[in-house]
Amino acid sequence: MMNFSATATLIFVALLTPSAISQQVAAHDFLSEQSVAPTTWTWAPRPEACPKTDNQFIEIACGSMHPPEPGNLFLEITDVYPRVLHLGDSYEITVTLKNIGKTEARVPWLTSGPDAMQISADGATASHQEAVVSVRLESGRKSNWIGDEVNLYANPALSGSYTDLSPGEWVTIHLKGRVECARDFVCEDIPVGGRAKLSARWFEYLYERTVRDCVPHETNLTARKIESKAVRVAVEAAYSTAAGR
Image (cartoon, rainbow, N blue to C red; front, top):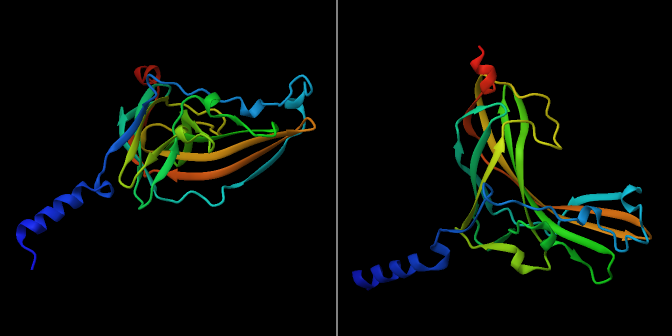
């Protein structure tokens, strides 16, 4: 029969095992950092031989990575400032991406896209992996993506371009945006004067650009798409407009 001290020792040891440790392992603060896009989208193997590659017809293929990344990550908004958003004004948001599964996960973590771009052995393909963190605002029965999104990069050929998350571990991202329609998204107007919801999305994909005989072929393979739960905020008119009422 196991005595009390032996039982207590086993419990203490169990609590110290890696699977039981929950902690932040990395963070990016985009108030002071900046992500730089790679040149993969315009890359050509021999620019002098294909001077007009970017203006030619591009074949695009979309799909999902196989096998897909396991769905063991949880995205959460942990802080929003201010809670009353004004059109055209800035806001700050903090999100965490946590491994809630039972196996290790890895996520893109470079802010420099050029460092993540790799060229294939035959010199015909450029590739990189990218994670986009974007923010959505729901107000007045309209849902709009608002600026600004941030980007993180990696490449399967570069193990050091990822951050590994053991079960229970997470990364934190702090970003600053503006309450206005984000670029590259359909957004007509942002209703004001009432309650609203703010949510975040982590969208991760592998991009490849192959150029053969001066004809580009692009492939986008989705690796992950994770949506956070929405948090309550309020949206008001721009400060100048509000002051003139």
